[in-house]
Length: 353
Image (cartoon, rainbow, N blue to C red; front, side, top):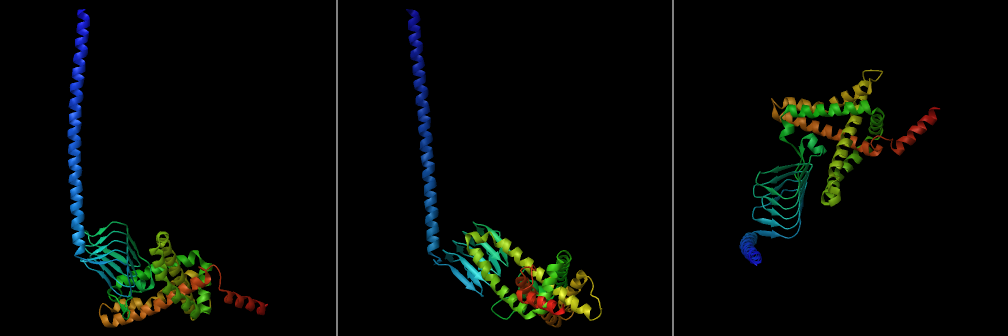
């Protein structure tokens, strides 16, 4: 009997202890839930206060609900301005000090992001650079694609006013000489490893110079609109680096063909037999950049005269690059001669036979 009583007492005590422990755990859980609710309420109140502050701050600013697009002029978004759409500048510089809810795109110019700039989308510079303050906020991606567009290569600043020689092109001889050496190395490599396509470019420029020159101008005019279409499209944005590489290849490939023509013309006056294609190409690059280099050297002692010579050199280099680009387009990257030149070649062969 006593054994049963002891067992009952033990079971009773166990139930009492279990009840006490469960009540303690429930009370602790209730305290935690209350604390969590209080923390959630505090967070909600903080977010509400932040939202109210943002709304009150934004109401004090100038708000633009549409996209802002400017061509050939400077574009500025001041600190007290908010743009709900995208901001696009073509052929001019851009300064962002306010808030832009969409993307910021600058084509052919410099994008400057001040310390107070807030860009909710992407910041994209094509054919230019991004000067970003450490405190500037860009929630999307920052993409800067330096394209070897001819004005940049020649040291000429494209603006609504008359093109003028920039500081980089008018004085520092090392910069000019470095660009010349780069063009020389690329042209020599192209002529050495791709001799037949280079000779097709030379033939096209020699026999259809004005056609190649005009086609090259058309290609330069269409570059910026093409890249702009790629930038503003979601799928095309990924193709911008590939398009920039293709443009660079076309420009340097074209200048190799024009350099070969210039070298052949030079040596044909002094030699009955032309040198190797690499030697003619190297001499042609030197002839094309001669005024540019001489002007850079003179600019140290006589800035005005040197600047004038550099400007003339820029014109010569631009004509060469433009004709080369046109030849690349006409020959489809040197793969074949234009139809009219092929027909002339075939007729010449027939007459000689």
